[in-house]
Length: 597
Image (tube, rainbow, N blue to C red; front, side, top):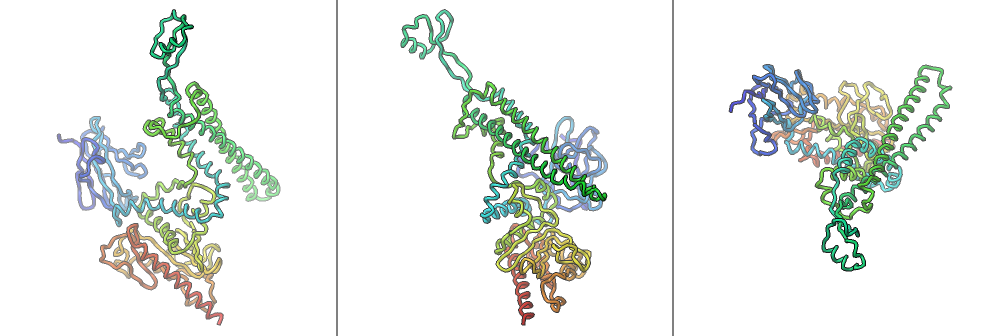
């Protein structure tokens, strides 16, 4: 049957008619011929149909803006049109789709048909892209866990002081899924597992009663009860392993709510104490509009914080009452409170019991870290993914090179919270070995001019190229700044970077980092500063595979190019980076030594 519907995929050079399938074959068939589009390649889709009621649903595009687009959940819905929809265009829709498979569902005559296309990474293989994406989360959590395990002196304070931070995170989660929790419990109240049990009772012989072998045996033992029958009574017994676990879990929920209410009441008390202390100075801060604004801010912050805490207390108190009510109803009142040592199959296989058990497991988790919600979105642009991966990879590699993380970013947060923060601009991680201290800084803008605007930024620049991806400031001690190393990540092939070398904007950018960054904070004598470059080296870290046609790196006046991916290049890059750090340290010592002479 020839369908009166078409999906055309157009690039700058070709037009392809995508094959349409009667049902969804993406997960069931391995040999589908799926059209591939390289990331950052201009392409559009045209939906053709002779029925104006037909709908074309492209999954997972709700975050993007297209012409004639309606959104339902995470999907984009289009109607048939003679005009193509630009899915990626440098001029009209410059946000690239992340690599992966995309399904187009076509609603025609009340039936869904399917077709597909695939975005492949521009300068990475699919395995490399997938590994890079997973490595970010693994490296962040791994660095945090390793940092805690190696700082035993902090462990006690972490256990004592951060339990409330863990609790706060868990409360946020529990309140988010509280409606789902109650819905599951209500279903279990009416559909709980049971077994049919038998109990016996002496009944008057005049009533019609059933008997069994046990009845006959018992009546033979008691000839004195000639006017009675020992009759079996069948009943539903809910004291089964699944319900013991359910009772245990609901009791845990109730206790969790009670503990959390107590915790938030203590927060409320502290908020009020802090506010009362601040309030003493209100009258002294009424002389200017700035001071009055400070007072207003303090009041507003207190009131909003109090409102938020009261809301949590109220929600938790209501949940606690609900759980206590469930524990005292007819279903669970007679269920043994002692859970079985083994986990019943139904706790895993039955959807309702399993949801309850999974919520309990997450709340009962005593350690481990949760990544900030922003980690769910960073990978949607591969260039950004490579930049973030590059920063985290450098910290991980320096750690392998015997530099120990001291503070900053996740290494501050793990002492007080189980939520690991996202990588924001200006993030700084302090690391040190036996002789050097490094500040590894992410995406921080360098001040323009001759004087730094903040003591934390020891460098300035005379160029408008002011925001390298990664800057490694080098210190011979806590305060003796002796130079910096710049690393800029490039999601492209090396031949693209150095093409027409003398006129490449990227080469100009890296050269500017090398030549235009200066510092008045260098801890060397004045007579050496003119000949002692502030920037020890600039690295262009690139992703693209040049298949051996271009050397691994090209050095040019202290500018080095290295291909670094999850698959290879890390060790070569680390070796050169450590070498440059040693050269800077050696030169500094020579200058200081000669000055003493």
